[in-house]
Structures are given as C-alpha cells and as structure tokens.
Length: 176
Picture 1 (cartoon, rainbow, N blue to C red):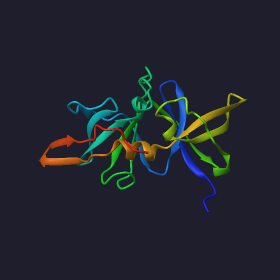
Picture 2 (tube, one colour; picture 1 turned 60 degrees about the horizontal axis):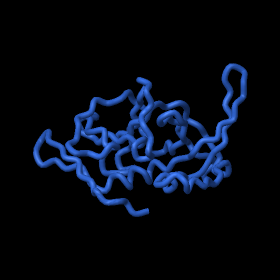
Picture 3 (cartoon, one colour; picture 1 turned 120 degrees about the horizontal axis):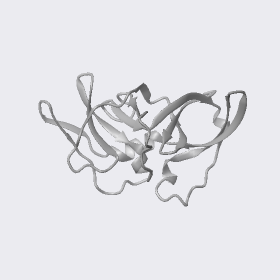
Picture 4 (tube, rainbow, N blue to C red; picture 1 turned 45 degrees about the vertical axis):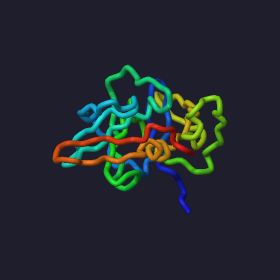
C-alpha cells in the first residue's frame, strides 16, 4: 500500500493548486510554441522537445481562469505513455513545491457551484508551510491532471509529411 502521494504545488492565475507528480517527468522553462490553426484556448501550440513535436496544453483556460501576469511561466513535461503515446507539455504559471501527502489527508470537496471544474477536483488538502519563522496553513484544491488531459486529448498528433504536424481534437463535450 502506498504510504504517501507525491504532489506538485502549482500556480494557475492567482491561486495555488496540487496535482499528481507521478506523471510529470520534468519541470522546464516555457517552450517555444508553434500556433495551431483554429485551436481552442487551452491549446498553446506545438513545441520541439528533443526530436519530437509535442502538444503544449494550458489547463488554466479549461478551468475558466486567465493566466497570471507574471513572467515565471513553467512547463511540465508529461511522461510518454502516462497520458498519451507521446510526451506532452502542460503550461502553468509557476511551480512551487513537490510535497509528500498522506492519502488520509485528502478531504472531500463540494465545488458543484464551479460549473465544469468539479469533475477535475479530487479533494482538498490542508498543508502547513513555514517561511521566515511563521507557520501558515493552506487549503489547496487537489486537481486531477490525468483526467483533464485525457478529456482534452480526444484526438491525436498525426504526421502527414515530415516536419508537418496537425493537432486533431473532438469539438464536442467530453463525457465524464
């Protein structure tokens, strides 16, 4: 039985959230993206990663949020095979900490008033942080990054010709 969860504390807009760290391979600076024609707002584009072109997804628009006005954006590289057949990138406003949390510390969250977001929340987690000798308690939403990405990735990356990439997605609503 797993003793603890490895969660990553991220910033989306003005708020901090927790996501599962087990599907994340690396944290990198923002990748240079190539725009995708007629893409929804959560598709930032395609980016070169090694020898592959990978999709770059911003989860903030999916949750109805604007991006933060800071310049410290970060990109999370998702393991190949964790969500899709290729690696992929997730753009967030910042990454703060990697935390170990006991599964028993996850509290249920009723956020039914947040239309569309409730299906991506695993629960609430209360954390204690110390900075400059002060102890603060934080209550953070624990987001289901895997579900967000699998709901978004209803299509696939195709290569009709070398160095030409197309992003395909289903324009309908994802089923829960």
